[in-house]
Image (cartoon, rainbow, N blue to C red; front, side, top):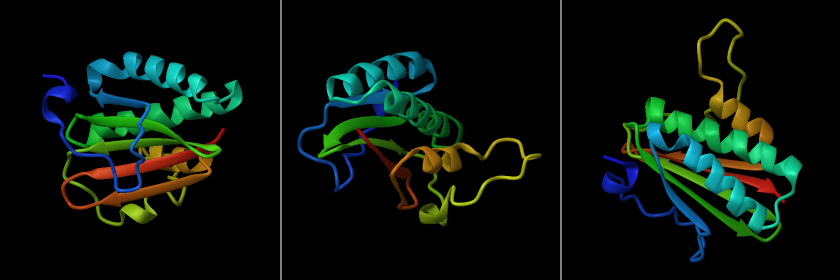
Length: 143
């Protein structure tokens, strides 16, 4: 069963009416997801340097969905002025302290746990929320 079949969370309240990409996230969709993000971001005016950042961000967030967020979710992409927004939602157990997640680097010896820190380093703005029934990350990168 794909993420499109069982994930139904609607876009976050900050999402615009015009979402340019809305794609399911699961373990079988990472290649397709990266290709779709790349194509849509380019169409929305994102340059190569920023696109490289966005692809890392989208991959890290999708990997978190697969690893920690119930294994399926959604990625949405849209332009907001001179920024490109990448929203990733999951339907997992949620997390406490979501707004502070990824604010500090993880120790070098730790296995995993660097994804949100990397996302915060590459983005101009990151909002992470959790309602106890999933996590929503909105990552903004200047075009």
